[in-house]
Amino acid sequence: MPDAIFDDPRLARIYDDFDGPRHDLDAYVAIVEELGARHVLDVGCGTGNLALILAERELMVDAVDPALASLEVARSKRGAHWVAWHHGDARDLPPVGADLAVMTGNVAQVFLTDEDWASVLRSIRAALRPGGHLVFETRRPEFRAWEQWSADPAEVTIAGVTQHREVTEVRLPLVSFRYTYTFADGTVVTSDSTLRFRSRDEVEASLAEQGYRVLDVRQAPDRPGREFVFIATAES
Picture 1 (cartoon, helix red, strand yellow):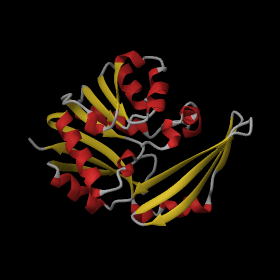
Picture 2: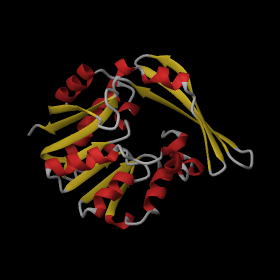
Picture 3: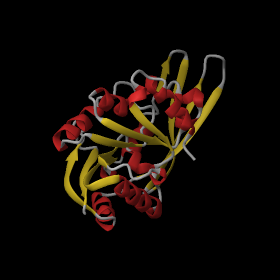
Picture 4: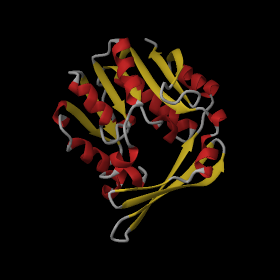
């Protein structure tokens, strides 16, 4: 089940406000151009920001997310009719034959078990054309981002809604945290999330097991030293 931050309509409607400018997407747009992709699959598309940027560039875009509330926000945006929106996760997709699949925003970390992660990689590979590419990011565990989250609980107020973040459990490789939203009318809504932090070696081994070849591992340009960006190809 998707986390409330994505699937509660009250939170999905304000998600973009709290997420702020998506400069992290610039690197993905550049990689799409670098690889010459014309058909992109956006896995875990959320409120649709990258999918809509790519559609505006006249690319064919399939976008999938299990959070219906986030999809509804995405579908309400300008240019949304140019994107094929799918409710579900990668395992629910037909073989769309995409040139490139992407997972932005650390979507790769929401798959907590080895079985789930392997299943998603297999499903993405089945949705790609032979020789298609997969690009995604994941936080580097050695940076220990959860320690920074604990030290800075980050309380932010936007448009009368206050967001507070707290780390609730660290049991590596899993880290759990909670967002609490307090609305102007006094309504309080919480969202609990857990992420898995995989090492570079773990990720590379999992890709090889599912028929991918890693072409490059980069840093996220806007978060140097904090993220791995994997570029892999589906072996034919």
